Image 1: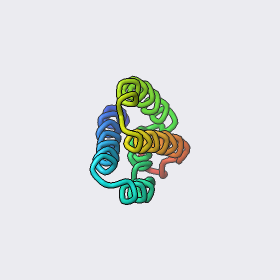
Image 2: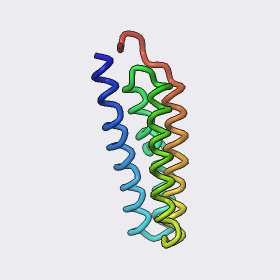
Image 3: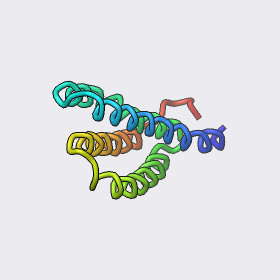
Length: 119
């Protein structure tokens, strides 16, 4: 069972993080600033859950959070290097906000102890 959880947490994490970033990018690029900013800020907890849930799927949340955040930060730095120079200001700030919230969610997910009997 543990092997299945180790195998499942990374694809689930990648999918949830991609969906969270896609939603932020969709709202930031298509809605006016005064509408998009409160929506993105309001759903910050849901964005954080995109990193908390996969860390809780892993048998050891601290190791799961370390793996997930290491891969996320590395890939996001590469993506931001190509995205930020040509991006409008608000979508870039919204994406950076989502990145920070995802990293905070990963730290929270790694520090929460799984419930007893989940093994």
